[in-house]
Length: 75
Image (cartoon, one colour):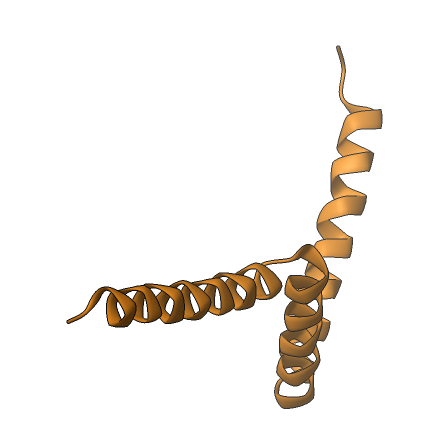
């Protein structure tokens, strides 16, 4: 390879690497991750609403129980 070809190859490789890093940076931004998580939750709820409602109910009961326990325990 000539020097010119090597420089062109290096330049092309750097451009490809820069594009790849830009895409990775975009995919791991908090806003993008939040959007992906919201989509996952929405699809999951659409498929299994009873499981989500049971989980929410169990969490609410546990929360109330923890508050009651905190207020009623003897120190």
